[in-house]
Image 1 (cartoon, helix red, strand yellow):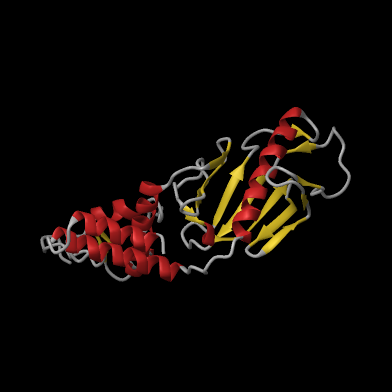
Image 2: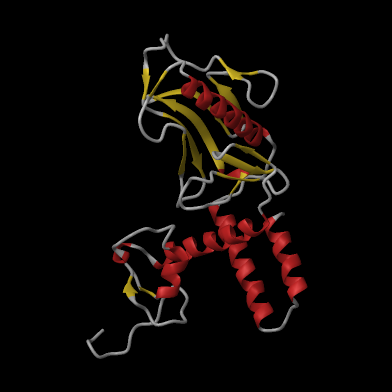
Length: 249
């Protein structure tokens, strides 16, 4: 492309003039805005057109989920779930993603580099026992501890099926340190137990596996029906009804 030649067309949307080159095409500023938080990069030349299109499709799903997310349970500021739509999110995590129950692969509680409690899809929690429902995981510690032991890491790690956000962390001790058995430590342990209980319940529920490809297919369908709405072929009510059907099969 010469200095004074016409800009290339964006290979992502095939509508706008591009502003940057991709690995195998070009991208416009509108498409960058739609996926920049999922693909935080300074070198778009290493990113393929397909990856950008996938990110935009997932962003479309996420925006639709945000619109219908209704918090029914939460553990302070750390974890929220929508039991009606089977969604969950970690409010402090960036980017702000609404996940489905089916997105969880496994999870674990990390303390000073050690995994002290584990769980996952179709598996009960290992390293701790559940008694009496939410907030009752006990016996999940490794080794003997004293009140003098310093804790510099205490967080839950969740592995997801989202290729753009495969690891989600809930950090209770974001900075600094505390001591085992302190009021602060016990407070964090209580929050962690409640979240682990909810995660165990979520992953124990029978669900139909949902791949990233399936998620992207749903987004493509929504985009298709939105175009029909814009073209006046279907009504706003028909579009909303179809969107709900796609997001809540």
